Image (cartoon, rainbow, N blue to C red; front, side, top):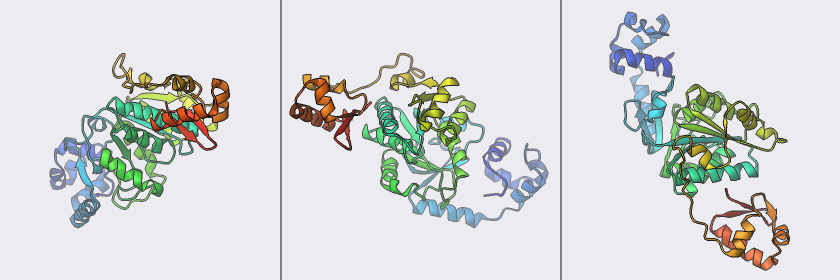
Amino acid sequence: MVPGVGPVLFKRLAAKFETPNKVFKASASSLMEVEGIGERVASEICSFRNWKGAEDEIGKAESCGADIVTMEDKEYPRNLLNIYDPPPYLYVRGRLDGDERTIAVVGSRFASTYGKMVTEGLSRDLARNRYTVISGMARGIDTAAHKGALSAGGRTIAVLGSGIDVIYPPENKGLYEEIAEAGAVISELPMGTGPLSENFPARNRIISGISMGVVIVEASLKSGSLITATCAAEQGREVFAVPGNINSKGSKGANKLIKDGAKLVEDVGDILEEFVPLAKVSEKPLNLTKEEAVLIEFLTEPAQIDNIAELSRMDVRSVSAALLNMELSGLIRQLPGMVFVRNI
């Protein structure tokens, strides 16, 4: 809460003085020995008296059910400690595990059906393989990433670009509560902070910093997801991208990442093999009937029920029964217009 002291200066001060208490007891001349601390910031530290403001902030966090996890706590993500500018503390709804295996999955807010389908499938498979899925709870790809992990009964963490008590977008209130129950919602921003555009680039460094690798699914050339990819590369994280439609503006960013050296992702094995060589992907056995085994081969792309029947040379009634069974099993999903597509 000291004006002029952000994550970088906090880290330098903590390294020199060991504890915040010793920082406040230090002389201005001692403080100015720290790189980046000038006379103005040293004066702000020495004259700081807003202890009530700090106590009020802690009280606000407690009142909304949030914990404050500091860099000294074992729950603080170990990966995040290793970046250049880690948050000194995090507001947390839910539970953090400092040593968990984490993969970020992010992308466009204006996601296509293809993008959301791929995202949910990859996130579900990551969760089945006991990876925690990190994303930003934004509309589109981020929402699909959280939902995919939750659908597999896995953990997921949402990193907000607002205060922990400000749910954005508002329609994700239910999702927010599900994530807090099954994983964690976190923020570095003070209580009550709105979702201002300037907050999100800094938020993106946390998404990549907390993760072992970052997967980009659908992103335009000016997407914030590319900022996350840049942060990941600078932090020494693996960068992955899902190829998209070459005629879609929403795929230009992800496709460019692949051209620039990001690893192309077709399935979860492409991600896991970077961390566990020859990793075996955990998948539920399909146990398909003869009819279902035939039909599922036609559903790698969305297809209308009449076209499926024509291509499979099966009658519509049999096709409808088989599709319903596969939908109930979570193997496929139905889109508007009696259109079906396979869940990856």
